[in-house]
Image (tube, helix red, strand yellow):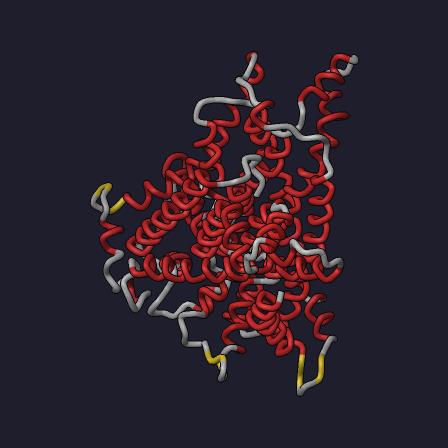
Length: 536
C-alpha cells in the first residue's frame, strides 16, 4: 500500500487540503463560519438545487431510455450485436468536451435541428439532459444488462407455469434480482451527472451552473477561494455518500440469484412484440448516439466552400485568431504523450493498489479501497488549481513541468485500473504462488510466472480504459496545461470559446479526431476484454 498511499497523499490530499485551507483560513485560524455564509447565499442555493435536480432528472431519463436496451442486449441474439455493443459504449469513454460539442452541432445555433426545423435547444436544460443520457446510456446497458444476461430465465418461466402473468412473473422474480444492479447503475449515473462539468459548460451557457462549473468559475474567474473551498467540501460529502451507497449495492449484487452463462440466455426475437422492441432500441441508438456523432463529423467537413477538409488543414496553422501559441494539430501529439505517461503511472499505482486489496486486512483494506475512489468525489477543477498553488516550491517545483498533466490524469485513471484488475487478481489461486515459492521462485519471479500470465488480458483492458480516460480529462488539465502544449479537450474548449466560423469548424474537426481515437481504443478493448458479462 505504501506507494499508492504516498502518491495519493502527495498529488491528491495535499493539493485539495491546500485549497480548502486557503479558503477557510485567515491569519492561521480556521473560519468555519464561512461555510454557513456561503451556503445561505441565494446564488449558491440555486447552484446546489440545479445540480441536484438535473442529476435526478438525468438519472430517471437515462433509466427510462436505457433499460429496454439492457433487456435487448441481455436476452436477444441478433446480427451485429457485438459491434452495436461497442457503439453504445463509445460515448462513455468520450471526453465530456466532445459530447458537448456534438450536441452543440446538433442542437445549437446553426446546428442540424436549427437548419432543418428552426429548433434550438442549446442554453436549455433539455440539451444538458439529452447529453447526459447520451453519455450514460452504456452504464445502464452494461451494468444492468450484464447481470440480466446471467439470470436463469427458467425461474421466471416457472412462475408463469404456476399461474403468474408475464408482468407479475417479471415483477416478483426478475426485478428483485435486478434491483441491486439497477440501483448501482442509477447511482453511477447520478454521480457522473452530479459532477458534470464539460457538458454543462458548453451547452448550459451562463444560465446553468453545476457545483463543478461553479467551482471553476469561483477559482478561475473570480479567485473567490472561500466559496470554492466550501463548494468543494459540499461536493466531496455528497459524492462520498453516493459512493458508500454504491459499494453497498455492489455487495448485494454479488450475492444475487444463481447465475448462468450468458450464451445460454440469449436467443433470436420471437413474435411481433419482441421484434418491435428490438427495432425501437435500434432506433434509439441511431437517434440518440449515432446522430450526434454523425452531425459532429458532418460539421467538421462543412466549410464555406462546400464539404471538404479545409478545417482539418487549418489545424496545422498556429494563427487561429490568437488562440494558440502552436498549431492546434500539435494538441493531438501532446494528448497522446500525456495519456501514455498517465497510463503507465495509473497502471503502476493501480496495479500495486489492486494487489494490496487482494490481501486480508479488515478495516484497513476497506479504508484503503475507499481512498482510491476519492478522486471521483472531489472536483477535478480543485485538484488542478491545487496543483498550481502547492507544487511550486523545491523539491517539488513542478508548476512549469509537463509532468503535472499526466499526474492529474493518472489520478482519474487509477480507479478504473483497480476496478478492472481487482476481480481477476482475487480469482488467482494463492496456492499457485505458494507452489512456486516451494519450488524456489522469488516473490518477483512468482509474480512474473504465475500472476502476470493470468492477469495480462485484464492489464491490457485496464491500460485501455486508463488511456481513454486520460486522453479526455478536462477539469484539472484546463488549469495546468501549458499554452504551448495544450491537450485536445483544452484545445477544443478554447476554439469554442472564440467567435468565428473557422474557430467553430476547427473545434468540430479536433473533436472528431478525439472521438475517433477514443472509439478506436474502445474497439480494441472489445477484442481483448476479459469480462464477457459486460460489467464495467
